[in-house]
Length: 258
View 1: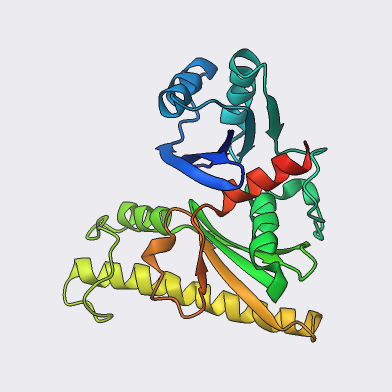
View 2: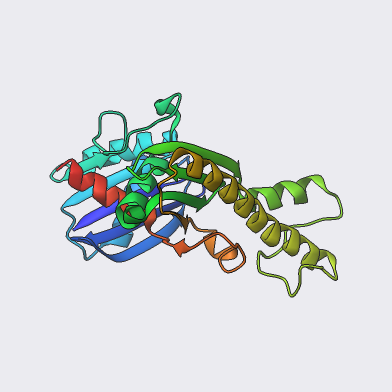
C-alpha cells in the first residue's frame, strides 16, 4: 500500500492507497517545531494495521520536510520513497518565469487535475488552504501560473486582530447576505466575499484561456483544500469538488518514478 503525505502550512493530510483507490485518510495539524521522532510517532499511530510498501511526500514547510527526511531515513529504509522536489519526474511542464518558486503541492495538483479532467481541455484548480491558490492547467497538462490570495481563516484572524470591536466567528453560511448583527455580517463578508473573489478570478482566467486556446472546448474548475466546503454551493464557478486532489497527484508522481 502507498502512503501519501501532503505537508501544508496549517494541516498535514495523509492518505493510504491500495492501487488507485484511496482507502483511508487523516488530517492533522502541522507543527514546524516537530522533530523527526515526533513526526514518526504521529504517523505510526495513524497507519498501524497497514502494510506500507511505498511513500510519497510533498511539503510547503521546509522545516518539517527536513525532519521528515530524517524520519524517512530512519523508519522507511526498506520501501521506495518519492519526495516532490527538483529532479523528480512529474510530467508537468512549468511554463512560468521561475519554476523553482512553484510549490510542490501546486505541481501535483496540476498533474491530478489534468489526469482527472484533462479530457475536457484546460482546468483551473482552486485550492482553499492557508492561502487560496488558483492554478491554471493547459489542455496539454502544463502549469501556466495562476493567482494567490490570503486564505479564508487567516483573513478572519487578521481582521479580528486589527479591529477592536470585531472578533473571530464560526465560518458558516449566514441566513442572508444582509447580516442583521455583527456575527452574521462577518460571516456574510467572509463566505460570500471569498466566493465572489474566486468567481471574479476564475472568470478573468477563463477569458485569458479562451484567447490562448480558442479551440478549447471547456475550462473545468476544481475545488480542493480543507476550506473548500465553505464556498461550495455559493460560488457560481466551482464545478467539481475533489478533496483528495493532492493525494491523487502524489500517487501519480510516485507511479511515474517507479
